[in-house]
Length: 332
Ligand code: HEC
Ligand code: HEC
Image (cartoon, rainbow, N blue to C red; front, top):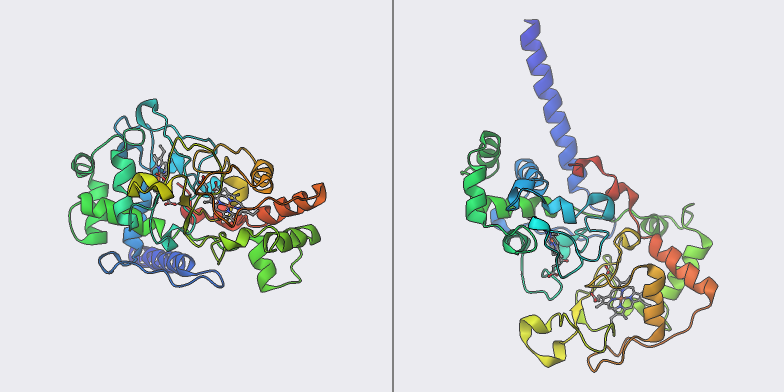
C-alpha cells in the first residue's frame, strides 16, 4: 500500500512540476506580443524537452565535437564571445554567432534574412561545413538507435525521430528563449525602480534622442525593426550581407538590424565581430562610419562628452536580463 501511495504521490509531483514549467515558459514580459507557433508545431512540453535535448547534443555534429549550445551559450544570451565560433573538425565560421534571445519574433533568419522560419533555419548549421558538417537524414538514422530519443519523439510528435521531428523540436525549444526582464524593463514598469541609475537614465535619453537617432533602427520591444541597413562599417565589404541573397548592388553591406537586448554579453559586435567593445561601437557611430554608397541616411556623426558616452554604455548594459541568463529551465 505504501508503495502504491508513493508512486501516486510522485506522479502528482511530476505533474505539478510540469505545470509550473509550462507556466514559466508561457509567461511573456510586459509589452511582448503573443508568440505565434506554426500550426504543425504548436508548443508542448514534450516537444520542448526533446528540442532542448537536441540543442545540447554534440552528436549532431559530424565529429561529435559541437552542439548548438557550443556557439549559442546561455550565459551569453545564447550567443558566443568570439568573433568566429569553431565548428566541427575545428573549422572556423565566417560570421559572428548572434544571440537567440527573442528569435521567436524575427520575421526571417540569418543576417541576410534568407530563411523564413526557425524550422527551416535548423538545416543551416546542420549542413554548414564550418558548423556541424553533417546531414539531417544521417543524424536521424543515428539517433533512432537511441531508445530515449525514440520515446521522446513518439511522445512529442507521435512518430519516429526523423528530419521533421528534429527541425520542429529544435524550433519549439528556441521559441521559448524569451528575454524581457532587464533593469530597463523593470524601470519601465516602475520608474521608482532602484537598479536603474540616474546615469543609465541619461544614457536612455541619449539613445532615444534625435541627435543620436539609435532608435530609428533599434526600436520597439526588441530594439530592432528587422530592416536591412548598411551602418557604414566598411568602405568595402568582404561579406556583402543581404546582397549575397538578392545580388542587388543596393544591398551591399546591408545586414539585419540586431536586437540590443543583452548587448553587454554578446560581444564582439557586428556581423563579423570586428568591434570588440561597446565603447568601440559608440566610437564607430559617433564618427558616422565609412562613407559607403549604401550607408543609411540615418547614420550621421555626433559628438559625445566622456560622461555622455559612459551614460550611453550604462543604458545599453541596463538591457541585460540576468534572470534569462541564469534561468535554470534552460540549463543543459
Ligand atoms: C559553429 C557555431 C554554430 C553552431 C554549432 C550553431 N550555430 Fe546558429 N548561428 C551561428 C552563426 C555564425 C550564425 C549567423 C549566421 C548568418 O547570419 O548567416 C547563426 C545563426 C543562427 C540563427 C539565426 C539567428 C538570427 O538572428 O537570424 C538561429 C536561429 C540559429 N543559429 C540556431 C542554431 C541551432 C538551432 C543550432 C543547432 C542545430 C545552431 N544554431 C548551431 C553559429 C552556430
Ligand atoms: C541605420 C540603422 C541603424 C542606426 C541608426 C543604428 N544602428 Fe546599430 N546596427 C545597425 C545594423 C544594421 C547593425 C548590424 C551591422 C552588422 O551586422 O554588421 C547594428 C549593430 C549594432 C550593434 C552591435 C549588435 C551586435 O549584436 O553585434 C550595436 C551595439 C548597435 N548597433 C548600437 C547602436 C547605437 C548605440 C546606435 C545609436 C548611436 C545605433 N546602433 C544606430 C543599424 C543601425
